[in-house]
Length: 455
Image 1: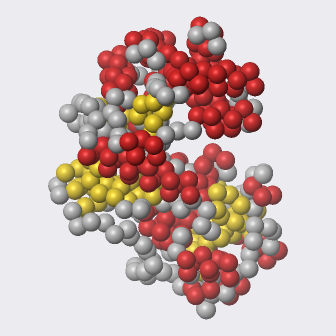
Image 2: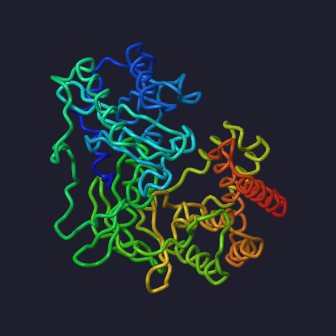
Image 3: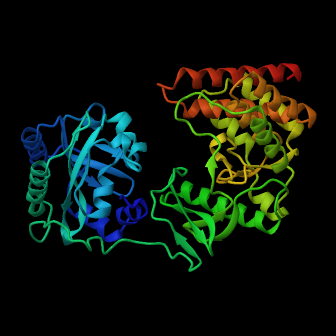
């Protein structure tokens, strides 16, 4: 089983990263690497072979054959597209007949963007005998790899050892390979389950376990960028503050945190929004419960110093979306004028209250998780997020009626339009017709509210 937590630590190990640099290879074609990839492609009868080095935030491919454009030209991908990082993390050969069905790898962007179906990768060792990358064979159809094919792949990877600066020919790693594996300093009260990580946010892993016998979730930060660190710290701060002064709606309950791990309870259950297909099946009572939770959460007030630190900069949002072309100058001007009217109308909000952040507990009650974007927003921020996620007109009416009853239509309209602009900024060119329709509908609704308000 792939241990994604250890993989993240090994990939970022300083000694290993120094070894990658010491190979002298870069994100550009290297003749001997390309020749080795071509040889492996012919011997193994696979359309794609890559000689990959795994860096901290990307993988580079000095050897490549068969990769689709623009990746063949760029010779690099972010780690979201890297299956080779799991070879680096384990120090062992990895063979998967169908990546799309693997419990950990099925979320890799390599499936969608690189066309990966079957994968086999052997570790590449460099200076200091560090695993610096992998030689991998890829097929665009599911494939059962034979023992002979995997042995050939390992021998070809071993050929690279001297060229990459390894002290000798690489040997198949023994059962204790991975002595560098890093583990966070978990507190004694926490025991983790040995099951694959659950989907987490960007730069996160979510692991289930128990805290003194109680079911908990451990959120582990795996990215070291300033944005990832800031989001994680905000989430941990908010969880700790909510434990001191609980809000009226059940939320994930803080147990412990440091600069990399956050342990919370009440977040173990069934995701309310599972998407085996694109159709959302949600009872009206459940939708009303989510909307009610959003409204109740906004009545929680943090301490004054926390509120100041967590205040969201709306003018910066407006300026950013206008510069990017997701708001017209007229829309930006109208939003700015309306903002002056209700700038002081701030409440706490989840910040990203989509249905993926709602959990149904075994007791059937709902709880909220994932407060990385939480903070002091204009009133109606969470309602605007739910308006975007509403599966039908009846659910959208419930959301809008809640905004009318609370007399927060003005800030709700600002949040709704900014949410549409932000989602448009994130939308891919090949976004689904359903998502594009939702964005256009939310934009029309927000502009209609602005007209009704005389702005």
